[in-house]
View (cartoon, rainbow, N blue to C red):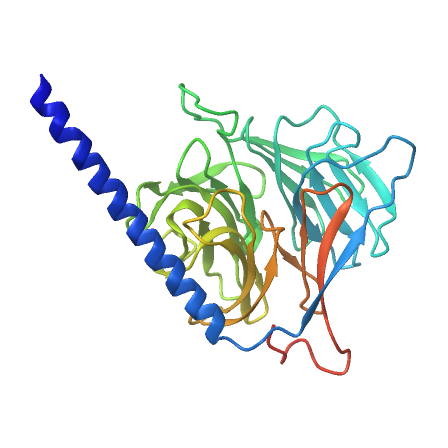
Length: 326
């Protein structure tokens, strides 16, 4: 009995050492890409959310999105405010809702028609609302693992394809992408656990660009994977531990940290060419869980501090955000 144990220990150490070396190489590659990109012209600002009443306070802001009117939608996990909070650009609370409807609020997205969608990372429920908070649809994704090591066992994000097609990242309990119809009927799914093409280790964010290419933040594999709308693998960009992706015009914004650092750690919001994956620029950030982009092409994210967002603004209004590198 002694001999197998003596062999097991060094083999485990070798495997761990090899994994650490791969992660170190990935981080070195990411830093080289960021250093080679043009310098950022964005200025980090903080947007304070003003409490509408005494004792009101946001918890962790899990996700942020912004509608065409410029109103900012927050999905937060604190007990002293509703899960869904809508604010204006000055941080004034316009409305809120969702008390008792969530276990672990995870992502919030605004669809092209202005409807509000959220995912829950524990119940694996997807909810659709009007901008005023009226519930329109509930999708129970289900099929969570029977043995749970954590409360995080459900859906992570949602994206919108043509003709109402819905694409849901189911990353905590599973390792897959699901497609649903606009009225909540499942069409297909793809993905398995692993590190090969089309496999995932926590698909944490998803977005679809104007050419209907699907981008998935494959968080613990340290990459962004690309697919067509039917799940065909189109390629991948090895980067860092990527939390969120957002298509905006000809670019993809992604939030990430080095793959060899603990969760959470500071990292970057990175601007990528959507055709090639080339790094066009980056800004340092301690808010990485989500990223959205304003109409001016300015990234916006939440932080774990109370009642605050990070808004990376262009330093000069004279320079067009579409042509600027950030």
